[in-house]
Image (cartoon, rainbow, N blue to C red; front, side, top):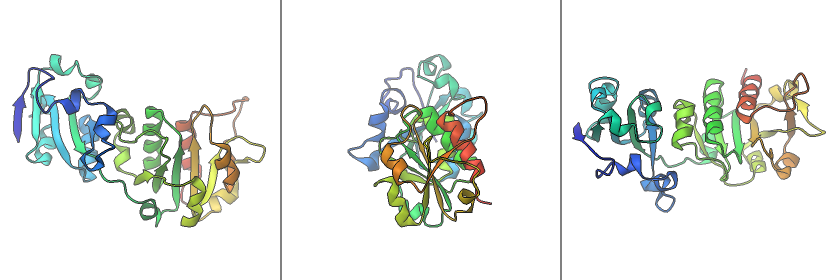
Length: 266
C-alpha cells in the first residue's frame, strides 16, 4: 500500500478522479487504456469480487483504517490518495460515495455470441441514454435472472460513473456487451425477440406464448420515442404491460423490472 497525502486536486495522479471527462476516461482511441470510476465501498467490493483491476484509490484518511481497509488490502500495491473531507467534498458527487473512490481498468467487451451462448433470457437496450435508467435496468436484470444484456451503440455506457452507482455494482454481475448489428440479428443466435411497445399488434406481457419461448430477447427503448419502427416491425412479438386507470406506459427502468419478472426463467 502506497498512501499519498494530497492538499490539492491538481496533484499528479488525481486527475482521473477530478478532471477527466467520461469520454476521456473511456478513451475511445485506445480502448485498452480506458478507465472507469467505481464509487462507494459496496460498489468497489462488488467490482473487485468480479475480477476487475484497480488502478488507484481516493479516500479520506480516516477511511484507510475504516471503511476502505478491506478494499485497500484487496487492491495490492496501487496508490491510495488521501486528503481532507473538505478537499474531497469539492469533487462532484463525492458526498454520495461514502468517502471512497476507485479508478479501475475498463474491461474488454466480450463477444455477443459468447455471452449469449448459454443464455435463455437476455435484455436488449436500444437508444437509452439516461444514466439513471441504465443503472436501474442493470440492477433489475441482475436481481431478476437476466442472463446477459446487449446495448446498441447509441445507448449510455454502463460504466458511466452514475450508471455504476445507481446499479449498486450490478453492471459487474450480468455479462454485457455492445450489439454490432440490428436487433433482428439475434435470430441467428437462436433468440425470438419481444419488443416492448404500444402498437395495434401488441400482446399482453402475461401471454403464455412468451413464457413458453425457450430463448427470448426482451427489447427496451427510450421513453421519449420508444423503439424504432424497424425494430418493432422485425420483432417476433410486440408486447405491452397491461395497466389500470388509463396509464399508457411506465418509465423504461420500471417497465424492465416488470418484464424481467414476468418473463423470467421458470
